[in-house]
Amino acid sequence: MADLSIFTGRQNIGDIPNVLYGNESFKDIFGEIIASNSQAVQFTNEINAVLAPMEVEVPRKNNSPLPVKVHNVKFAEGGVQTSAKEFRPYMDKFDMTKSQGKNVMVVQFDDETILEARNNKVDLDMQVLENIREIRGVYVNKYLAFSRLKAVITGTTLSDTIPTLDSGTTGLAGYKRAFGFARGEDYSDFLTTADGVTTRNHYRTIKGSTWTTTDITDAIDLVINTNVYSGQGVIVLGNPRTVQAVASLANAPENKDIEIFGRVTSALGADWKQVNGMHPDFLIFLDKGYLNGSSPLLVRGVEVDEAQRGLGMMYKNDLKAFKSIVDMNGAKFRIFPEEWYMTYRLSGVILDTKAGRGHASGTMQADSVTALENWVAVLNSYWKA
Image 1: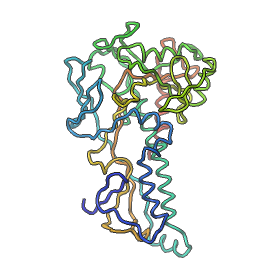
Image 2: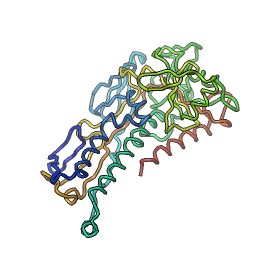
Image 3: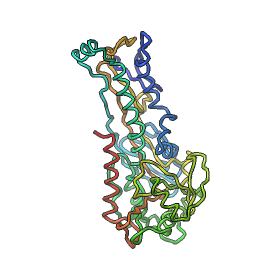
Image 4: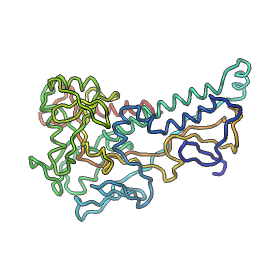
């Protein structure tokens, strides 16, 4: 390991070379890495700005407690151990798996390429910088944003499908059988609801041929009419065109400001956030109580070593300085292993608003599930090889 250096701009391993000769493009390469891992840059993406405040980053190590008040989840070797007041005497674990890291080769020039670049006065440093800027854009706007969104939809970045439909399993066995929103389990052992219904399915669809305000308020009620609701309101994420359609449906409500999200529309008892990147057919309803950080909606499992988190550059040369692009040949960019989990199964709702996919029960049927999982496949395609 002594000859392997990692640079992330936060915590590093090995000798981080200086850049000689005052080549600004060359220096900017390291600046791009620092920018990729900065919150300021990541929050320029709307999905990151909305969901990142709802997550907690936790190193994967044995008996490391997570600040999740409801579940008191703990990472353990091979699983997430869970005991919580609503489970009463129960003790069990959510299964988890460490993901693979992802590599991109950014500096791979053979001798002929380097010689031809010199003959034709091609700036290889600038070419590498442009490649790295492209990687930063994909990392911030696609990998991070869509990983968080995928975890909200399916329950974890390790799954491309939503939880299977359950037949009413009760107790801990029902709660911990999957990450993601409730889908058919009976939570009567700890849940109190306004209508007395404790069997929950939070993957919803419209009940008629087209959507109505009742479809919206029914989804909101699933979040707020329980004893696990925070009491701090509901935020709804939607494609800008879909949110505009809701505004028309709700008689063009007035706008209001919310500090975390900026300009938001209020309608039908919830706050609405227009998010580019959302599918126009689906709305995501979330309990706003997860914004204060005390009970994070998402758990982001990361490596114990701080140098192996986020996006970094790895190289094996034991260099004190980079003098030319040749010195960087073979360097790789790496997204270090990380996973997102959504463990608050009663904290939100996903509503399919597409006309023609409605069902009288108000719960997603096969065509809605297929459309939602197809969206997940599209999210993966933006950054997965």
